[in-house]
Length: 252
Image 1: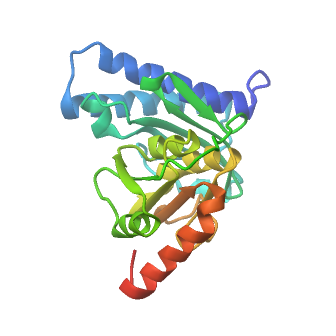
Image 2: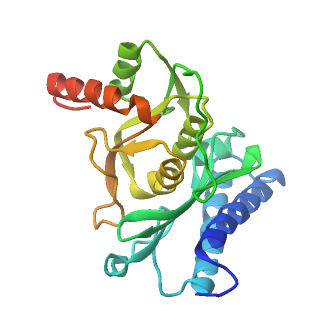
C-alpha cells in the first residue's frame, strides 16, 4: 500500500481518471458505435488494472472487463470495478453512463466512488449526502429491461417511472433527490451495484435486495438478481409491496 494514496483518495482518483480517459476517447470523434464502446472498455480497464497493480498489488480484483481470478475469494480486500457502466449510452452520446469503483472488505463496500463524467462529478462514500425534502414521486428503472415489479411498485405508490441507462446514474439521481427509489430485478452482477450501493449507503439511503436482505459482495457466483436503493423512510412500504408482488406472481 503506497503511503501517499490512502484508500479513500485512491478510490476517488480511479473514478476521476477513468472518466477523463473515457471522455478523451469519445471526444476525439474518430470512433463510434460498438468500436467506441469497446475501445473505452479496454482502455479504462487497462489503466485501472495498472494503477491497482502499482498501488494495491496484494488486493483482490473483480471487473466486468477482466477474466475472473478466483484468488480474490481468499482475500479480505477486493476491488470491484465496472470501468464503463452503460457502454451503449456512452457510445451513442448519452450522458447516463458511469464509472464504478468500490473497495470491498469482507463482503461490504468500505470505500466507493461513482463518476458521472458527462456531468463532471464524482460521488464518493466519504462525502456523499442524500438530498431530502419533498418526494419527487418518481422511480428510476432500467432503460433496457424495466422489471414488472418496479412498474407495480410505482403504480401502488402513485409514482411515475423513468428509464435511465447506468445503474450508477440511477442510484446517484436517487441520492440527488431527482428520484425517490431505484428498483431493479431480472439480474445484474456485483460490479453493477457494488460502487453505487457503497456511495448510496454512506449517503444515508436504504440499500438491500428486494426481499430486504443485505447486499454483500465478492462471492464465487457474481450474479445479483435484484436491488433496491431508496429513501430510508420509504423502504418498509416498498419492500412490503415487493413481497406481495412476489407472493402473487412467483417472481419479481
